[in-house]
Image 1 (cartoon, rainbow, N blue to C red):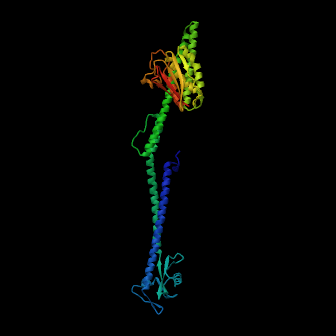
Image 2: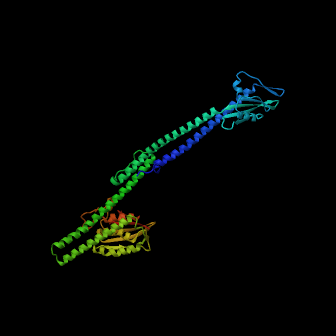
Length: 449
């Protein structure tokens, strides 16, 4: 369904521009007609004054009496001029009674203009005849306004027509200009929508554009980067999940097939059952860790916990597992209460893979120490194993990476990446330290206080 014209940005901008132009053109049109009317009215007044002055040259005053003498070419003047001695007319051109009465009414007036009522389009002007400093008579001149009225009428019609033409042209030009200006925005919006679904690697780049379009392109690129990162995150999570679950699942399938194919001694069957149970437990732990990471990424695990209690629980849970591998676990609990801004379950999920990595590579001992540094709480896990080379401090956090494939240790290289991702989702981090002091590896878990 097509949107109404003025519901679009283009329509609204065009309407605003047209409204502003209409106000400006109307104001100019009114001002022009007022100025023209004033100019024509002034011209008529000047003509009346000149006509009265010309008639005054034919007037003589003798002993207080006014006489009018004919001058050459005065015929046209006499037809539009009245001469009064006092209030008595001594010269009266022919005219309709209404005009005569209006002229008589101006006898004795001085420099007065009056338009004839009734729409007769005639203006009268009374000019005084002065003798000895006093007014003894009056000259009344008449001027038809029909020519001036026709001029003003034509000017009004022409100016209104011109205003309408200008408004129409303004509408077309503005709509076309705004349409062309918004065209690239429409194209960029369509491209961004299409790329987000079918080509998330495409970007607008740093091509030369006007400042506004360049800022829009930068915003779209940032948005597409976030979309692509989200897609990569989901793909990576799926890959990690399948990779991490493949080993215990394959072990369960293999043990079950062996149990089905041939009879095995009781001790072997019990060992097979125990292997299946351990593999199932491993799968359950992997799923719980991945789900905790997903919840933390979604911001669902912003809570609070007491670090001393969490570390105490980890010591009890990992002491036996470390002992089975001949490794002593030493967990230094904080001297006082230390609260972290992360749920206890998430803290356990972060520290679990780090402790598992340390116990598998340690020779004799694993030590856990805590520290408080301003708004951060650190948990350092140290072991006396071969350590991490300086050039591999970041690579150990890549999924599936194992520094020594034939070291005889189980694992798929996903524990540390999951721990780091979970920590960063909780506004923390996990980093590897090159020099642990005395050899071995050291991993520092940072948590918000």
